[in-house]
Image 1 (cartoon, protein in one colour):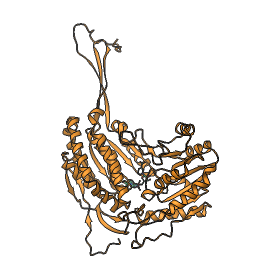
Image 2 (cartoon, rainbow, N blue to C red):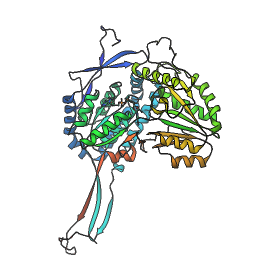
Image 3 (tube, rainbow, N blue to C red):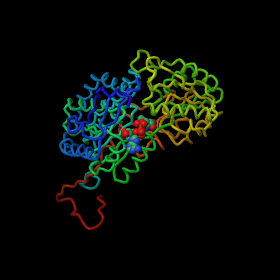
Image 4 (cartoon, protein in one colour):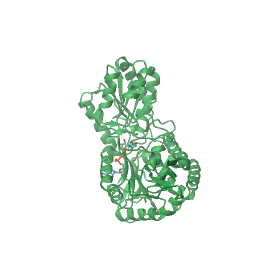
Length: 504
Ligand code: NAD
């Protein structure tokens, strides 16, 4: 621990049954990545703490699921206003613990707030279907009912937005919720819990527990939890999916990514380079929708590489609170060492190092977890810098001759979160949209993150499960359908018999 022993650390509490609590047990460290030192400590939940959170959520469930959807939506409306008022406070917590720049953090909080706006319309989304006379005098209708106690397990890179993909929709649908945010960025979830309480949410409907694998495993095994939403890296997503299936839980587990941007020779190169620079290096590349691989087709390669080099080297790097900073530090020293290791590997494997960020020193922040922007050209599909998700400020360029080859390359990659094409050709874009096997596609849009009233999710190793998050698919995930067939006996209807009824 880098913090001098005589300085008392702030403890980030958990939130159980409407109260901040600090259970006895293991503690973890929360860093300020711009300074490179420990800033806070956070308690880690054991199975007993998880059980107390689940019990609180289970006790709150009957009244909350029976509250009219309109009343639940009104709580969401108050929460929405409070979140708007506190947008900057939340963004400051994100910057302090994750390191991304304050404007970037503000944007991510805004995208999360938009899911609350969507959840305010839940009475409409919960409407069922009705068919009159499916048989003589027989009607049929559907209900969408909450699934019960739901859990969310979230990654470090979006401490506000990713939890907001989940719990506003789950709660508006009538479920209660236990959130386990990343232990690296725990504070924003507690502020959101306080704001939910201020908005009138009954105690126990929303709970926050902290911790690592032990806390996650206790969530996955707990018989009181009906559904789990996970966002994080692919190996853990797969583990969550398999373990939840083993325990009979509904699960959606979103994983990692390697997002390709295909650049055709007819693209507007200046526009494309600007779009790619923001998408590759924004948030220091720690975005699941970051563009990490450019696929340059034919004559697009030389001009796009030279523009990317110029723009990557002009990026201003500093603490997220610095006026005018484009990019902040990485989240931890361990992660920076891992990303640096990939740059070393890329050089060894024979890729052309166009810009090298390894030597960067940020004056006054020499111990911060900074790494400069790195650009590789002539990368081949077998290299580790192509095969693995690096999750840092490293952009690689692969060269191919045709659109067909570019599509085949993207489709052969096991990740399939997002992708983009840059072109002036409607025909090429249409073909790409049709043939590409990826969940979210941008046409001249580098980070095609769907708005809240659409659903977010990848394919293949980027999502284990059937349903994407938020939007209509989020409502489906957090509800179960019940089909009710009704007959009111009267003199004209025949009495039920012993044969399979055909109702006609
Ligand atoms: P991570 O997988 O290490 O951690 C995610 C969550 O899982 C955390 O809450 C963590 O405490 C928990 N966890 C970690 N190790 C575990 C283990 N062994 N067993 C059980 N639980 C464990 O991910 P991260 O480093 O926090 O986040 C970065 C990753 O998340 C990247 O791979 C990124 O692509 C991905 N991500 C994906 C999306 C998406 O929408 N697909 C969005 C954001 C981030």
